[in-house]
Length: 467
Image 1 (cartoon, rainbow, N blue to C red):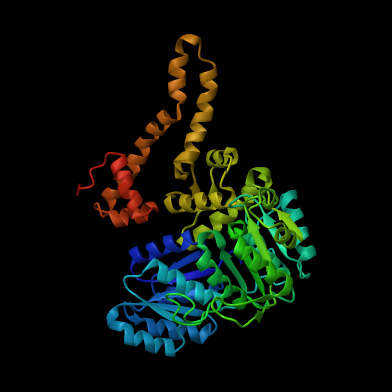
Image 2: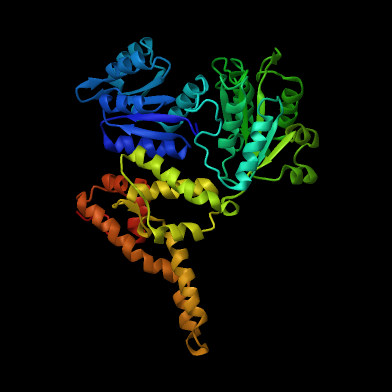
């Protein structure tokens, strides 16, 4: 299990595509189905953590889909999407086992909340190979093998683990592997929270919970993530974002396993393994006085450094193959691999965004691909610019003094970007023509958001009123 896996069921391709883009942006693994029959095919092929299905589809309703899913997969959470006219039916579906429902138009914050609640109450799926905690984790390089050895060594101890590494190096994946490798905790929840994404007041409530009336908007008691994770593991991502006050409360949880909900006087006890992650050097923050030294030493019992992708080049090709396979399955496409020129571009790129950037690049390429293998034209502009710039730099060095100014202009990145506008403009015009200037459909085919397409139209001087 690399990420929580969600199946979206809706007969409207625009809604499916919008939900796919939104959920992928939240770091979920997503597959799509156009109807109940296709949904069951997906569910029998591999395990999912959550199904989000439209209520009204041709020849079938949400209750029928729910019944089919619950009959064969009783523990799978199902969320219904309905119009206001079907709310009473949706409430009936909840009585039949649906986790919750959302009304159209879907609000992203409501969708995110219901997904978080559904996933926090689930039991972590067992991997396909229960004895291998690294199922689905790609890492053949010596650096990653060293990480795997350390994970195996500490998994069955109660030690707190600190994961350090640049953004996108896979800290979340390794945290899940630690949880899966722990024989005592693997059947209990794995809960994670991105601390840097929340303000202090909300973060405290998310971590420790609150009681009704604790603050404006606290209309009922709420469990915190520590309470949900009791018996299992909790990943505190971006631990460096903790305020001094929260650092004190976290130190108490780690040392004494005790905490209080916001607004409550009762002390609660929790048994949870804490895994902290950061893309900064906590030791430097301690020296600067912004992070408590005693908390740092409590977190740093076992420190695991995840190397950037540029330092583990042996993993690049296996990762490319892995992401092509996964994206192809999700998109229903048969992509057999990558051409040699495209592979050369991927090999020579520095990957400042690490594995996460590579994953996004491959996913985009699979969406745009028109052939059996990914080619250079399927890659983002910044990778293609790098390729052209590096080849032109050789010619530029051979220019004599008289033509050096022209050579510099030819190699100028802005000039390259201008040159690349032509094929990009042609591609967008071609897709717009195919869909009769339906910009929503064009954005879907191009694998970009509608707002991004509108920006491109303006940037490339394409008259958006054409028809």
